[in-house]
Amino acid sequence: MSDTHDESSETVASSTVSSVQRKVGGFTSLPSVKLFLIGVIGMLLLIPSTFVWVLVEERADRARDVAGDIAQSWGGTQTVNGPYLIVPFIETKIIGEGRKQEEKIWRRTAVLFPETLDFSGDVAVEERKRSIYTLPVYKLDAKLAGKFAPPPPGTFDAVNGGTIQIEGDKAALVVGIGDIRALKNEVFLKFAGKTVPFEPGLYGMTSEDRMAYKHPSQNLGSSGMGVPIPQENWQRGFAFTLDLKLNGSSALYVAPAGQTTKLTLSSDWPHPGFTGTYLPDTREISDKGFSADWSIPYLARGLPKVVETTSLPLTGRLMGVEFVEPVNFYQTISRSLKYAVGFIGLTFMAVFLLEMRSGWSMHWIQYGLTGMALIVFYVMLLAFSEHIGYAKAYVVAAAAATGLIAAYVGSALKSKMAAGIMVLVIGAVYGVLYAIMREQDYALLIGSVIAFIALGVTMFGTNRVDWAGGRKAPQGALA
Image (tube, rainbow, N blue to C red; front, side, top):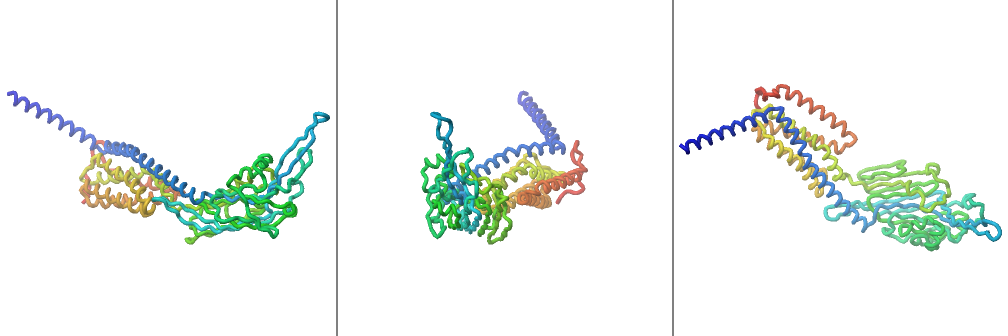
């Protein structure tokens, strides 16, 4: 009797559990409930997508560190600022009367700009690789030619009512270089039939003199060079030339140091990014490289012919070119993750519509696995991009994800047609994503059109669904 009673109790309990499971299963199979669960799953997938974004940023930081190491050895971003003619002078004035008289001294520095400056440079670019990372580096072969006019009237006028004494023997021509360690030639100034070598910093003045005069060269340090100019030359004006051979990486900037400046750059790098305060007047870009010309007239430069300053002029008014890599795939992948939720939603909606039209059902866990496949796509894209490039990596990762999801959905719904439809849907999703990443200016337009189309398909595709009690009998199951 006891055994019979126990068996009866177990049967009742089992029947109760089965009844509860059927009720729960029936409830979760309602289209409205399932759609809600799909939305929850989509939101939960934000968590792994965030982890992927962190991984992308970590790899990007590593790439920047390696690029910095390469630049440290080869040469960093270069800026050529100058040449300028620097002439120190002293203004003195007697202040007070009788025993209270004292001599007040102002040490001043006049910075003169070349009347004309022609800068022509050829930039040979190559990619240096360390481990799996690369950095565009270049060799600049440049020639600077120009002319200094005699100092204009008023250059050495007293501003405090004192007496002026020009320190003509301490005049010098200086040039600022962004990373002087990367110079690859001895630099000589050719002027007035002379050839004089440059020295680091300002030749002919001690550091104490430079500080006392608040001289612009005090900011040159090891990143500038100078050469003394005899008084008889700078007072009458002189023409000059100098040659620079300079290594650098990532970008090259030039200051419009002349009252009228002309800059010509040519390179074998086909992906220039022109930047700075002034853009080129003309430019030609092809698969073999680029050439560009700048012309900055006196008025456009916005500075007088002579200034008094404690730093090199024009540091904030540069023109130049960045040697851009065709695709910064770390930035592109990071940006594409912003659209992850939208594309997960499109994929889930396609699966949901197929489920509503077929005779089979997908469990919400299967939706979760499908979503994880979409997340793994980004990891594969990152990993392959570091080895074979962004475009090829995108094809590989998209093809793998499309094949996996289509096969899985087709198997779950027992329909080859469903698998084929998913190939088209996922392929279109990745195609749109690629287009958005390549055409960032049209991303909003493309995204809004896709969202509108997806909403329309969903509205009419679910028009016959009884959201409260299950779906109506399909017109015909997918084969």
